[in-house]
Length: 260
Image (cartoon, rainbow, N blue to C red):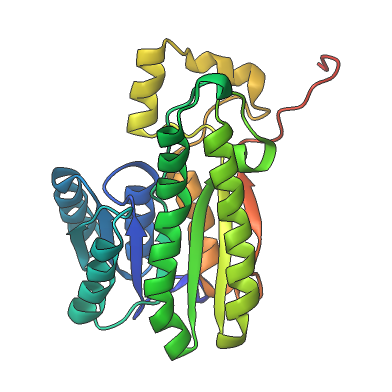
């Protein structure tokens, strides 16, 4: 195993860890030696992913049913991590998402919900896990954002604004906690073909061949490709990288003349 990516002895928390990017990230971190806590609301997804990770890697993968929008549940999740696995070294704030809709019809409840899920939850998790990272003077945090937070998206004023806020939260965390040896970075993802996304595209009638014209690399990404970026950020390979947002999106969607 590449020494720079060796996570042996470290403990990671991955929110939204039952499916998609979270599940892929949990497995990759475990493959590189970490014990992992996965948190999400759906217990069946957690149990299935936990069993698969442990069977494939031989590492602990502890499923903890958690609604990350609930402050007390987050407190209990981090406490259980430390109680059962002894420490916390890595936090991946992956839980997020939104339903899109035009700004003119956007209700206050949808605006608040978007910030609760995409920003407030990351604050809860960062604050609670951060107590341990700061005390031990080491650790890494990766927040999963979106291209919407970088470039915006029509029909998603609440979502784009929340993800932009998450990116600034990442920068400030890095600036304030760097003195304690804690690094914080962000991954802004484009169209990722997770199982839930593929089903949502099917229901919405979106043909994935559309990505061949919108995305320079000509396809949607995979959860594993996002997990690779997370592994880089949490590993010693990124030991001098903090406060950054990395776009994992297949390239820039750019206007102009058609080039062949």
